[in-house]
Length: 195
Image (cartoon, rainbow, N blue to C red; front, side, top):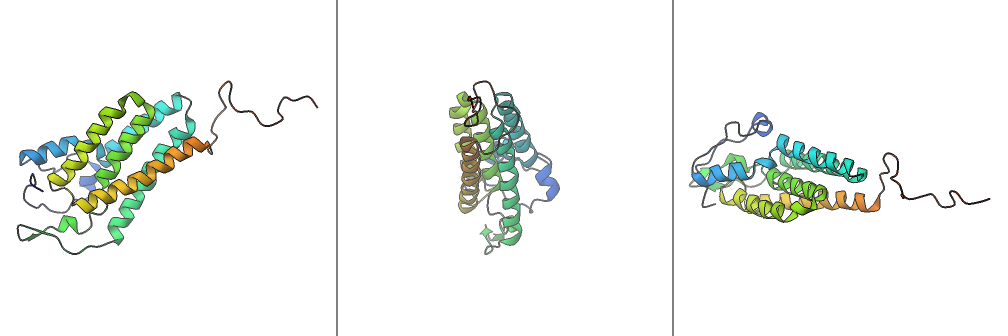
């Protein structure tokens, strides 16, 4: 964690809900990580996924429009449950017990940054390469700036992969039939056939 500053106090629920509230901006690496990973913050990430869902709905991709917010909600719920039920041995940095790492698995920022990138990429495929570059930068900075350990980041990425795979699979399978089908949509077998 070469860009990390001094160990800070554990984050509160209010810190998680209000973007950049009490966020450290020193040293420079931490400040850069704060800005780059901001779309992974709880409220901002939900709003970005909701924007993607709105675009998907307008594109007629209703299952995807429901699947991405549902994936975000379920994955974030699993993250919170894991953080409150799993514990790890104490981690020390510069001889100081970093209490914030006691319940930091999986990384919520890695989880939500990945879901934001996937949802926005699903809604606007032309943005997939810039979103991929941003996601790599965000994930690397989470560890380099000392926000999370490598195992936290990997845990967040694994949970995000499962959630994104479920959202993509839901759209492909078309199991959620919402609204009226578009013109040229699927018809029931035998519909319109002469009897």
